Amino acid sequence: MDVSQIILTTLVSEFSDLTDVEQATRVSLRLLLAALLGGLLGYERETHGKAAGIRTHMLVCTGSALFVIGFVLVGAGDDALSRVVQGIVAGIGFLGVGTIIKGGRMNEVKGLTTAAGVWMTAAVGVCVGLGLEATAVLATLLMLFILQVLPHIIEPRERDDG
Image (cartoon, rainbow, N blue to C red; front, side, top):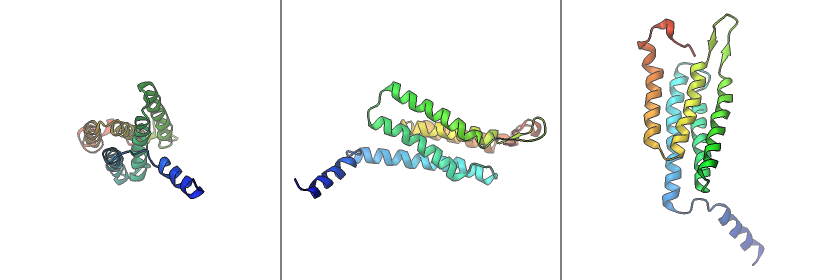
């Protein structure tokens, strides 16, 4: 076997994780759906001038889905998948901290809603990665209701400005 044949064989084996059209379609659909749902949530935050907007939410949602999809594709067991989800939850918690600003006055904290939204967006991505697309869409609609409609229903003094 000559060098070029070895290189070609190695390249083919390295890009063989999507073994058939069905699997490639499933992975593509999940990643695109995660990007779309994350984008919807990010658009809502961006239109309100919040720190984490469309790109951040899209990356968080798609990244969370990708971590889960990767482990599902390699046949990881439930225990490994559980650790992946735990890592996502903790890691996104640190990212959310970056959106929280504490003001000089007592009780002035901004960004909590955005931080919680980023955290929830990761949860939507995990659901998409697990193939729970309907649950992810329902959760996204619920989040949009909470962010868009609820502030008009609750008393202004009870609202979180973040």
